[in-house]
Image 1: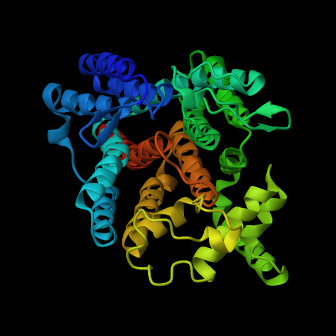
Image 2 (image 1 turned 180 degrees about the vertical axis):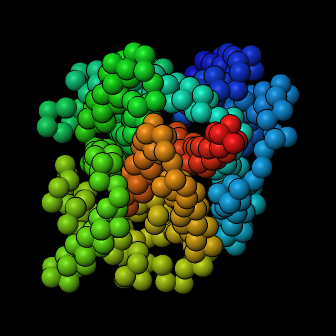
Length: 433
């Protein structure tokens, strides 16, 4: 492992800061160090690797339990239960496919730190409108700052955020004359999806703040620049899906007609064309070859016996060997998050994950049509756009830390925001009475 002393110093410094800050600012500090410091630079404790983010989030929870009464006020709702269910089901599936208990515990403890802890941190901390807006301001600032060195890397092919890590100093691949920036993430796709998510959710600020609105517009623009800097089809797909969803805002009452039209279009392509509808995406990808691989991955996994004999609990951490049927490469590049979960944990892990997503969407929209304030409607719509964009993109991308951590922060917001708006509506009704 590289730069252990540096990593310990950064982790200790930020952890002390998190212990001193109020919960919202502590959460922003966690997100900042999560994306500004390389995740692969870690401290090894026994057989476990602790990146800075995992250390800092422990300090964040210590802050919550020692300095606040937020945990005592917390009440579980259905998305919370399904996050827990996902973890339990993954452990059960892993116990069957991974007889090595140590390997199972290492794998699942890492997922717990990267998924459950960020999600519940948001649920515990974001309890009112002011905290929600403050968090978005912090996230937008973090993402906008990161976009600047990312664009610099895209132009010069030099990474100013390597922090001395050799794997972050390699030359990036080029597309259309631009280097594919990867900054602290080490992977251009993961970096681009983070920018797409942060820009989409923080666009909700544009109708919630009145002062210095020009600054927030510039920062949102910088997140789009960050997406562009990665020159990745996956992150561009996420950004385009989010932008189209937001653009549909004024026509939102016609959402049923839009869904029906989309289903009909996919069905027509499936029936008329000699290819599956999901294979058409390679016509629009920056690299048609990789898009072809993604389409073949779906075909082999679902329609050519890829999951045969492993539907229930998956393959565990073993390579399913699908690449032999695709292009003969020695390792299956699992560039589809849904298939990644299915291959690792089978239906035992896949069904709870789908249930979590469906419940998050249902929770986000359960009172949407009853909202009256324009800024509230816009905030929910922008948050929904991110969920939509990411769910589309997960068909061609698998997300890993720190992008995965931020995705679960988004899921936490999908659970927290409706609770906040419902509580505000009840208080307003009581004042009227």
